[in-house]
Length: 130
Image 1 (cartoon, rainbow, N blue to C red):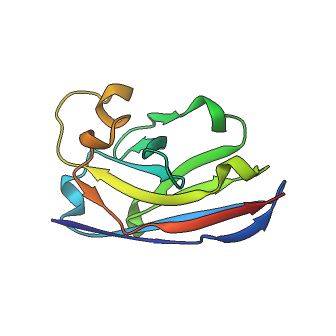
Image 2: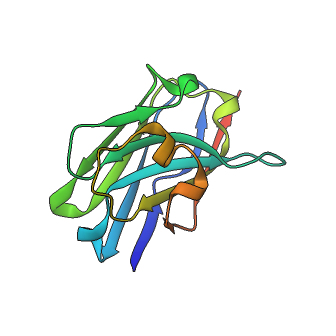
């Protein structure tokens, strides 16, 4: 089992920045990737970003490219989501997720759907005011 705890959410004005953190514990050696999803009120949970736990592979959804960056610190078992130039439409609960073992290289199709992730945090709220 892997446990995930998010932090760093809050209220920010449009154009501002936030950095989300997700600390993993437990069987972290079994993870192949970690990622961030978000869910706005009345909408489905959607993919935001993902990163391989062992390679340089990353993926970002088009709406955040150029504004958000995903990174990791393996020594701290932590993944980060740096969010710049925030917009009101970025308002959502942001969830950290992890995918279990995988022997072959990662593709977007592995992590782009919430069903592809095995472990979830409880979420952290990001509110962007206009």
